Length: 195
Image (cartoon, rainbow, N blue to C red; front, side):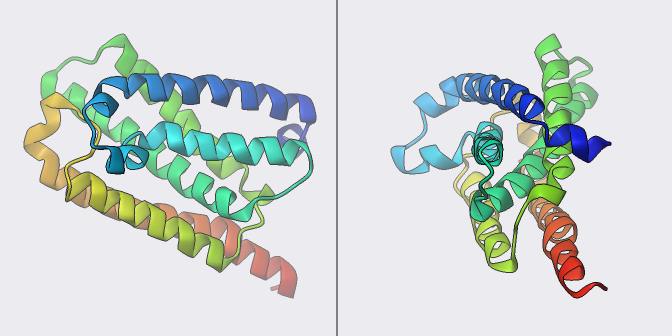
């Protein structure tokens, strides 16, 4: 039943519009940080909107019956990673400061949905190991840019925990890649060989 709904053109079109709006808002949310980011790091700073941009591209191709496995791999990995990451950062902000703005609660809801939608579409992805390797390189390279070169999203109240956040983020990347592998590459191999 869920798969039937997820593949309906009308639902896909609605989801695409929602994700386009969310992606645009995400890039707007990063506007202050992007204004002070060196040009060569610009592509790596707006993590969540870039993840949802990958998903928008996937949805657009799915609507017309095409597959883009490299984009699909980037979408599932980064949607889960940055969806979970943003939920964690906002909850940590609430714990550390004792307060979270309405925008913070909106970010928890929207990023939680972001992570879930990436996983829900796993049966539709045509990902092979080479696609996941490219997603791994992108994702782990992004962690280096964020936490070695200091380009991570700015959460002022959490600056004192930046080393711990970087460590957890690295392992969240590994977990995201592992989940993507289990839900796509491994599932596709099992279907092919009827394990």
